[in-house]
Image (cartoon, rainbow, N blue to C red; front, side, top):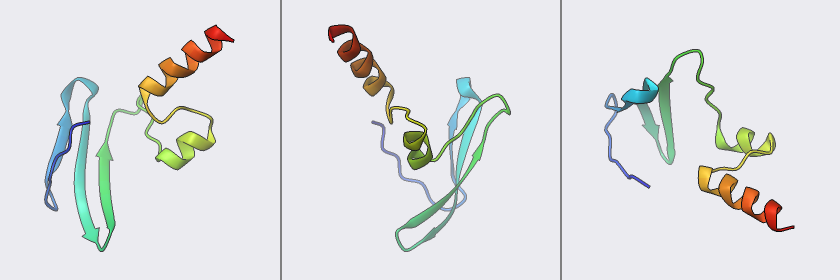
Length: 71
């Protein structure tokens, strides 16, 4: 995991995915982020992604597939 520090108004850019994440505000322990992405890229909050039954990290998907192959 890459850990970065950013101030309000600063961005993180993931160029090959055409993603830009901007820190919009920090209030207490809540951080507001703005995410710019192409319309073809779906962006989910983790709790919704989990509710949809998806793994929270790509390595979890690999582990799930390996476990299914062993059953």
